[in-house]
Image 1: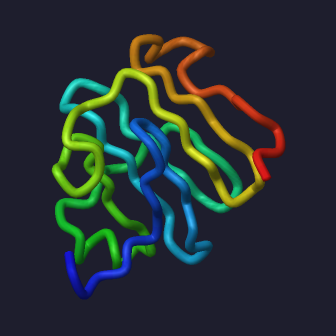
Image 2: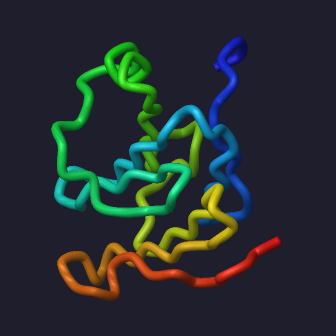
Length: 111
């Protein structure tokens, strides 16, 4: 992805930093895991239909992020931290999917 500026940064082994307000991130971990959206207001479950391609996602002002792809982490994650634009860091624990502990605020102010 040489000419394409991604709207996020990868930090460490399991942290994603959202950096562009105009694009939401659609986090896809595995086929059986729930899909998560990172917007400028925070992190929540993505209940809509996932865009079929990057072009379709771009039309909807989104970017697809495949956690297990080689250009992100290279493997699926059980625990993922997301620093959102609302100055909060969220913890996404895929082992607790379907419970209230799936997406939690990890740090109120990470800066």
